[in-house]
Image 1 (cartoon, rainbow, N blue to C red):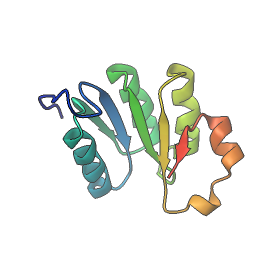
Image 2: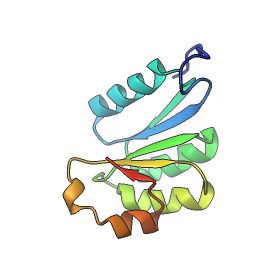
Image 3: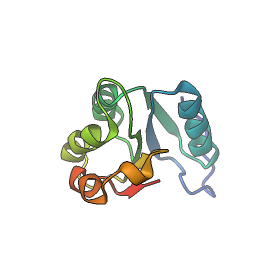
Image 4: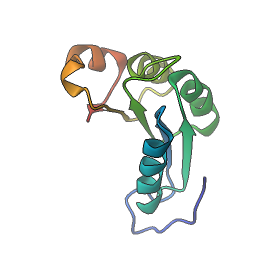
Length: 113
């Protein structure tokens, strides 16, 4: 999905990759990023799709769900970090207490929400 950009918005002209197995959450996050000026929002429903899509769209920011089929957020973050060493990776989860900060950091996650 792509929209016109407003230079006053924080994400002006940037690309985000939203990864979540729940389509409603994916759409909600994509809408939030696009309304903040992001030009392009790629969407994937699992970590494996995310790695493949990220190589194509080269995102400026990546959001990952922790718990997904095929490849979870921690594993995906580790693989994405190898290709995108400086791109912020945000791990979204309802199970924040179960995420080890050390494991998330080791995988290359920038922030756990």
